[in-house]
Length: 123
Image (cartoon, rainbow, N blue to C red; front, side):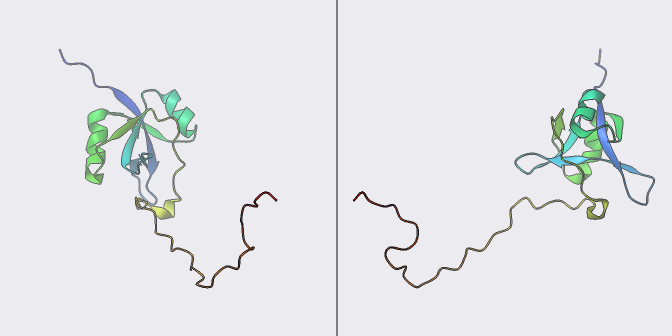
């Protein structure tokens, strides 16, 4: 006999200007995009707050919504979820590689002895 599917409380958001909701996604600490799901509503509220809209979805329905986004990992019962981006940002993915910060220019002039940070020797 087949087991009943697990039903998750899945955070969703309304798409601006549409009568459509979409599942919220997040990023793992390594930067990988992930789906978000909770086994109990209380855990969703603890991680995301009482104002977070949610829907009940089984795993296969959630995976079906995540697949077109290229997401194949679902984070179940995360302890903390970052607040959503401003609606004007939309679904643009954050960069997964930090921007390169140029090194400070090097002053080619020699530093005179006795200046700067040095360790004093015992006298």
